[in-house]
Amino acid sequence: MSSQEIKARIFRYDPEQDVEPRFDVYTIPVIKNMAILDVVFHVQNYIDKSLAFRCSCRIGMCGSCAMYINGKPRLACRTQVSSLGTSEVTIMPLPNLPIIRDLATDMEPFFEKWKKIKPYYVGKPELKDPVVIRPDSDEREFIDQMLDCITCGCCYGACSMVATNEDYLGPAALNRAYTLVADKRDSIRVERLKAVGRSYGVWRCHDQFNCAEVCPKNLVPTKSIQQLKKRCVMQKFGVFK
Amino acid sequence: MSNREMAVTPRFKTHSQVWSAVGMWAWMLHRLTGIGIVLYLLLHATLMGTSLIRGAEAFNATLNTLMTNPVLHLAEIALVGAIIYHGMNGIRLLLFDIGIGFSRQKEIFWVSMAIGAAMWIFVIISKLS
Ligand code: SF4
Ligand code: SF4
Ligand code: FES
Image 1 (cartoon, rainbow over the protein chains, first blue to last red):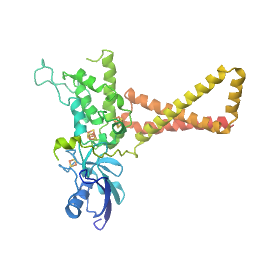
Image 2: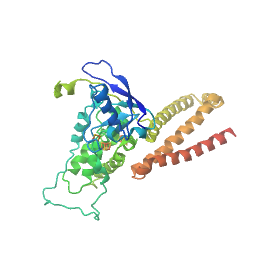
Image 3: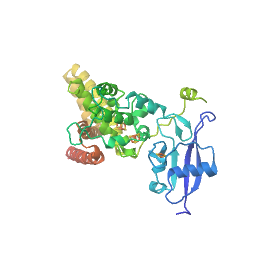
């Protein structure tokens, strides 16, 4: 294994200096259990110090290392070189987001939309803490898995509706909105529902499933979005309070 | 460069897509067949409408030209295929809309495609015989 090498084509672009982006090709020795994050670190440490990328936890928790790797947005730290099944890897920045430099994208539009759905719980004033929804009660809705989002933006970079509409809130924000709308103790559920029930909200989603295809946490935002669509319709008919 | 400046500088973005995903192709084909069917309907309504207004003879003449053109017969097979695809994938999408099948979307796609293909082959065979 250690004698092996991989060829990494890495997207390079510095908006302050370059007119056009380009690809630099590096040959890198493969080490045991090497992740794509190790590949870009190798380039930065030993070949070209100016390569820019973002990472923090290195264990798939922080969601900061998402890149477009061999045709799919993935977490660089959780993508093993061996899992790609090829000795050539193309690494590009996350699609649908402005590029700060090289592989580092500006997550601002992603989090602007995250803010739009009011991503925090607002308790009903009459409720006294701690309010519990018992796991076996009818009020309890299944959202456990949907809470696992690490806001990496992989889904945002994969969605063709995001690519074709700047205002579309995108899978991650809508998934977050659903986890809150599903919580009966929340006092601004209807307001939140109205914020997502627009043409640039849930109705933009065309059940393409690219988000679910790439989510490193195996979330299915499509499902959360469908649950929101259902509640939007119920709300129009006055059944959702 | 300050953050503020950075936010207003127009910058390069990539719009790479996920071409390895079944859902991506299902969506693309759904769009394409949808547009094709709408164009066909418009053409159909215009041709039929205008020739009908011009009287029985004009209508018969138009039909005659259409029905004797071998290319149009092939196009008709393609049209049937497009309608079957759009219909079958439409059923798949409707299932999602009522909350069924999110964890099995690819399998549902292939099953609906298999049924659709069988229907299409049946149409082709009965047309050719
Ligand atoms: S839903 Fe999945 S892909 Fe999207 S931001 Fe959250 S963890 Fe990342
Ligand atoms: S299912 Fe909806 S949100 Fe997810 S990628 Fe497709 S269009 Fe985007
Ligand atoms: S570095 Fe934290 S998720 Fe990859």
